[in-house]
Structure formats: structure tokens, C-alpha cells
Length: 393
Length: 111
Image (cartoon, rainbow over all chains, first blue to last red):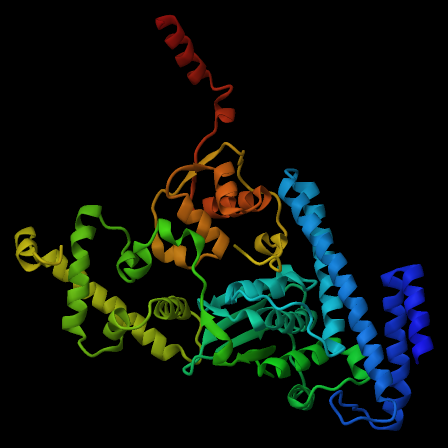
């Protein structure tokens, strides 16, 4: 074994990483194949020591080490490309750079997957939380047909730095699968909702023909099984990667049927991985509009009527719906979550969904409250206005 | 602002050709600011929208927000297509404007 590794390393020095990577891969495949036939399909990585266990370990370590070198190279390449992209003003040349960037990003994904399969961390986990939008877009960046993915509603929350890159990687594999298994002209939608207990439900929906029931059950069983390295991992690398990353962070992944046709892959991130969204840098230039929630929905009345109507809206909300959830939302909860839910409710109206009645009702309640406020504002004369709210203004 | 894992092509869906003429010195502004619409934009587009509330040039936006020009042009063009951003006519377009040239001539005569 040692001599073999030495020869591999020598070869690495002579021929460079790329050829060795191929070599290492084929060695792994060759090693796993006979055993998979002899000792059943699954060889759990974490199983107690077997006779040839050290060989596995060493090879995995070699693969992981090479993948790490690849990653360093690819990262430099990406940084270089990003620099060139920033300086490029010709659209055609930029499009070409984008294509190279896209290829390099997918190379990085492969190297990271190799590390994951070898049982290592894919890369140094960052310590900064990443917003859900960025986690999703990072995932989209690394798939082949990234133009087909549409980002739906995404809660304004973030994923803790320890897990954000891994969640991206996991999502990448699901998105890649969804785009590969659906018609090239259809879109794949990815969305993220907060659940009642503070966890996040990510959904990847495609419009393919869907999976047969047995196959879906099979896949779900595999997704729930303990991570294992078997010969199937070579063909279905994505599934093996998803399984391993999900296990690492206590994430649940399952597949389901989508209502007209197609498949939905769901990912449940536990509440421990969820954080407040990081403050956006431009927030200080516009602090006011985000908190004053329903007022701006008005189809822009003249500024003179709009300004004094604000206190009325707030007051009318308390009078008309004292104990209603709408009022509570406006006063009590931290502003990020309600604002995301309200936005969600507003957009949810056309396309029916599970949590919708509640959100829809709230939205209509908000709207009704706002209307009432506006009526009140129109009804009361400027004189009454001054008397009513001397302290408010 | 964004992680390097979010690639530029993913922000513009690979598009590099804006539908509007956007030179570095072109000025843009927001005609009717709508916070509700703003909150539904993607982070970079939202940053642009917020920043453009005060009339600024394309180059300034790119520098302040640290977004490459190639990306910013496409995003601004998207916003302009939705009439969320107004692209001010640039000097370039006025170069052969007979009306403007006449006015300059009149002005010169007056001096």
C-alpha cells in the first residue's frame, strides 16, 4: 500500500494533479467494484475496522488531498476570471469570460464533491452567515443549466456560516438533478419558506414527467439511509453527496410529487442553522420605508394626502382589528420576518399553496385595514387631523 | 457584499448585452420610489435601486456598490425596462441634435 501511494505521489510530481485525479478515481472504482459484488452493495464508511480498512482510508485521504490542491488552483482561476470580467466592457468578450467562469465553477463543484465523498470537509467553512438568497444563487451558479432556474419566494433569513456552503452544495446537486430530469424549455423553481418552528423549508420544483412511485420510494429510502460509499456513488454522485452533507448538518431531504406533474425536492434546514439576515450595506441610506409596511402599497396618492394619512393607518388598525394577527404583526414581531411573510402573502395570491389561506387572509386583513385608514383619512378634515394627532406628529 | 460563490453570470442569467445605451457617465435616477417593489428585488438590483434614488452615474454606482460594470448595465437595463429607473439622455445622443447646436450658436452670438 505504501509503495503504491508513493508511486502515486511520484506520479503526481511528474504529471500534475489532473492526470492523477483521474488515476485516483479509477483506482477507487476498481477497488470498490469487486468488493461491492462480494460483500453486498453497501460498505458504510463509518463501519468498524475491516481487514482492508486502512487502504480505504489512505486512498480517501489521497483523493481528498488532491482535490484540495485542485480547489486551490480553481479558486485562483476564478479570482483571476472575476478580475477580467470586472474590466471587460465588450459584451461578447464578457459572455466568453462568463462561459469560462461557469466551467471553472463546475470544476470546483466536482473537486468539492470528491472531498465530500472522501469523507472530508469540502472546503474551509466561512464564519460569516450567508443570506438564503445568496446560498440559493451560489447553488445555481454551479449547475450546468443555470439559466433555467427561477428564484421564487425566499424568506429574508440567513444560514449560519458553518453550514451555508454545504447547504449550497447540497442544493446544487438537487437543482442539477431537477434541470436534468425536466424538459429543456421548462423552468425549475427554487424557494425558501420559514416554518412554524423556525426551521427553513427549501423546495426545488421541476416540471418533468415525474418519477414512478416505486423509484421515488427507493430514492427516499436511500436519502434517509446512513451515508455510505458504494459503487453507485460513481454513477449517482449527486445523491451520495446530498446524503453525506445532509447527515453532517442534520438536514432532512426528501422527494415528492408535484401537483400537475413533476417532482419537488424538499430540504428542511433545522432552526439551529437559521440566522437573521445580515444587514445590507445600503440600509442606512433608506431606513424609513422598510418599517412602514402597508402604507406604500397605495397607488401613489398626492404626497400632501399621503403624509398625514400615515398616523391614521396605524390608529385605524388598532381600532378596527384590535386583537387580530395583522395588528400584532405590525407592532410586536421583529421586522424582518413579518416583512418577508407579508411579501410572501402578497405574491402568494395567484398561485395556490399549502400555507396560503393564513397568509392570504392576513394580506386581505392588512389591505382592509389600510383601506379603512385611508377612508378615515379622507373623511376627516384637515382641522380634525390637527386636533386628532397633535402628539403623533 | 456577496460571497464569491455567487458568480456574476448567475446574477444576470448570463446576459451581457443591455437593452439600453448605458455609458459610464450616463446618469440614472428613480422617478417614483416604491419601497414595496424594492423589497422584492434581488440584493444587487435592490442596492442599485436604493442608490439611484439620488441621481448618479453608472460608474459611481459600480464603484460604490462594488458591482462590475458588465453586471450593473444589465441590471439597470432591467430596471429601466420596468420603468423603475429613468436613464437620463447622455451628451452622446445630443451630439448631432440640430436644435441643441442652434441654441449653442445663439448663446455664442449673445456673448
